[in-house]
Length: 539
Image (cartoon, rainbow, N blue to C red; front, side, top):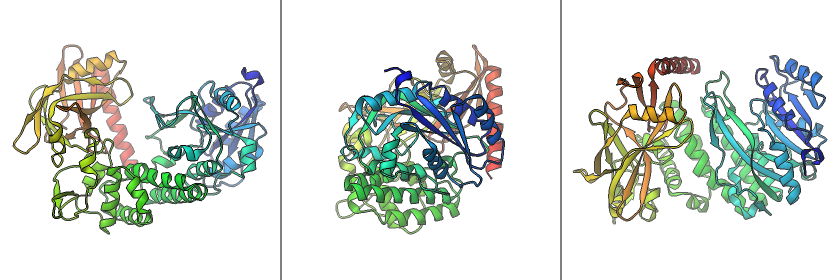
């Protein structure tokens, strides 16, 4: 079945004050070919040149229909609903004004929908970090290409995919079940829409094709809703959207409702907690709001969550205000999770607990596989071209496995293959952990980065893998200590000079910026100035 005789698709593009980007979005929809019978662009009463851009495009492209709202809706739901109402195609596909549809997306979705007679079809999506063009797959491993899911309750983990834009919807299905987005200023409206879709129990078909590119512009003057977390209002909105979605799903299927609660604890809660920051007023407001919400969760749903999420919930419930060691909680929420020392015990049997001040049981720790242990590894400079690491034991669990070797791993933040250093033997130390001096040759790393196509400034995440005598292993990030974060200029026979800027990520892990040669150094300075300006603007 070629694109000329496929059932037709209406692509709904919503736009508000996005004159500089909406043209690319619309063009990507029109470029899908004849399978897209119309592109419906809904201008949500923009005050910039968005209306003019859309009208000029419509004058050239008969398939483009523009709907101009006279009043701004305050959200994304109402303009999407307007687009559904104006649609005439058999299928509906959604697109935001700052994103794009990759070539062939609509055709791939329709062919899959028709082959399996599925009211809902889903494809692969990526978050593309700009300007680096680093693609991060959305929910990797959640879907199997070619799969057909007869009922969402058969695959409760589907609640984790809250996007509406990576899916094709049969318009008759939307009308039959009255499926619409929340109207007005409702943030995270796609949480609610996707819950309504799943509650309607459609057959869902899966294509392996890339169908959506979600652009992430962290340095934009106006960041997207999901990145705008400067006050607790964003978190409050996410909680309310999740609460509504969970009720919708629970009303249709207790299995889906429970899965939605677990997803919140394992994903949403940890994501916001690891970005909690140091502002005491924000911390206090966030803590109160979060504690009140998790107190409403059934104990069975808390028990069903991963161990790290359970411990976080129990610490939240144990104290009305953020504890003095709240930073430990943010590191436990990181990916991979790390439980920082000290390691306290409590109870008659000396069981692992959060701390002496908060003796919350770390239940399930003795049964965790080694690869899931929230191990902490410190790193500090040890001389030219080396770092000394210290691997902390965790209530004897790591000692049981017998740590033998460790080796550093450098993963390009822009995507690509990791660079692995040679493994080095771990030696016991006086603190009950293990230590080793590992190669940290940044000049060699820069050369490897150039070979991989990394130009100008290179950015790397630094991790460490620990291999044990019983065949198990654990991988985690490094906690930088001492003078490891000092910027330095290294002589290089290849580049003349190599600027190295180790830094601590938001999750407290070690990362690197390398700038080989004069061009790279200039790029590093520009980026630092850009981040400084962005920080002043945010303040």
